[in-house]
Image 1 (cartoon, rainbow, N blue to C red):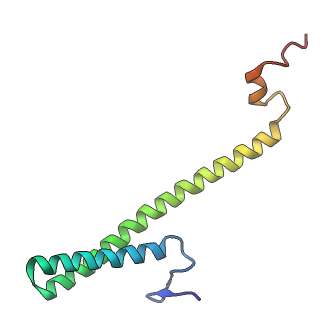
Image 2 (image 1 turned 30 degrees about the horizontal axis):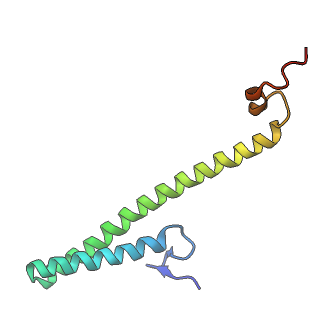
Image 3 (image 1 turned 135 degrees about the vertical axis):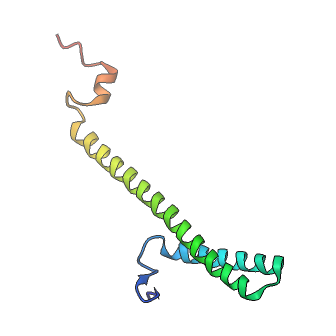
Length: 107
């Protein structure tokens, strides 16, 4: 079953959403508790906890989406390289054939 955060963010189907919410809640707890232990101000600690949730969640969201984009770029390059390898294997455009030079002596 799918869980929608704030009614629009589908946590199950959106990449990085689940991890961002979990790390955000952990950051919220740590920052709020730390501020409370340091100052003993309850209301301000709750404010710090909410700010910590937002900052941690958005920070991890950006980090995770950046890594996901990099991974997709690498996958696309690898897929194209494999397709080119299959396409050019055995032809005069094959880079492995040019490297070995074993079939150059046909003259």
